[in-house]
Image 1 (cartoon, rainbow, N blue to C red):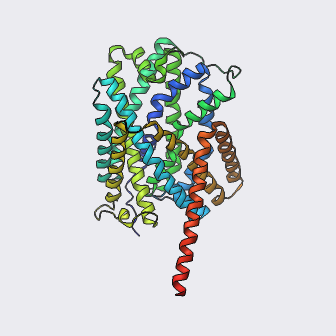
Image 2 (image 1 turned 180 degrees about the vertical axis):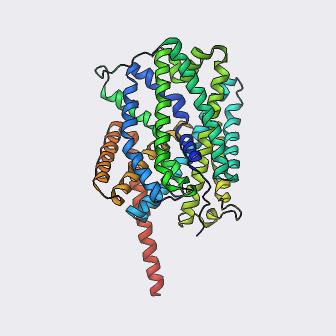
Image 3 (image 1 turned 90 degrees about the horizontal axis):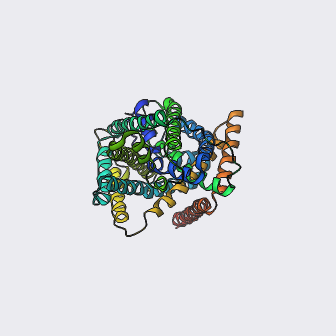
Length: 425
């Protein structure tokens, strides 16, 4: 059985984690949440940031002890059986296959708007997916180092613009009262904000290539702290620079901060920020998906051809090329307007959260001790509350998970019966 080469260090691993998290959600959600809730918008962000901690603890624990290209598919197979593992792997593949093109298309629309070149709405998604495929074909470490540069540039630009805005306009104190918030409005924003805290389950597909699995918990902690700090700066910058009734908050909140801090340079600066953000996210996600497809193929869940690796560096280039080609085709169809690409976000967002729940259940089964019981209970409460608050948009992914689980279970039983009959004959 081929295993991937361990080439990724802790620093590159941290930036790969950041790349999977800081995507299109960072460009939109701070603005839309502020537009809906005013200066109380920090409350759902804080709730999401706090409640996601036990889920991240589970993934850090699992990643350190079970580093595999299959990620949650492998964790759940070890803990909950082959049917659950296969279901998790197939749904993770589906979520990434729909979510990655949606992110690329979103970037294309932003780039077209900020550059004034409408053709980039179609060209940019294809370009960034081709670039991500080429980088992943060169190897995880090569792709990871490119993401280091992109995320560093992104962090510097966002931090500088937010700090300049706060120094000029001052820090506006957030509203700490929930009296004016309805449960439904808080719940809907909280559900949307959770998208900004997904990605750690995706980066787990690269853990097999880490040189030291003992650094994985530190990677989770470091990336979490940086993400929370970046989101906090964005929210504070919007509170100081924009009126919550500004309709621009729903489409280009980062442009507002840039205009207040950089003046005439705002539009080109925002364009660079969008390119860095989308490119880093797509590069990391394509790398992760190619590793997941390789892992599922190695386990016999997908065609064996996808588990082939290149001799000189053990890189699964067949998986990379197939994944890149499929994603580019979906992006091309979505950019052409043949279907609503927003549906891709709806399909993938809920599945990401379901996978958090599956990872937490795997942790609860495998971990021992009082700390593990406390974390498992916190995860159960978080998953239950978010699912209830989200309503049908979150219920459907859970229903889909169980339908796929039942289908695979029936198929396995039928296959087993056929094999028994063949043996008797």
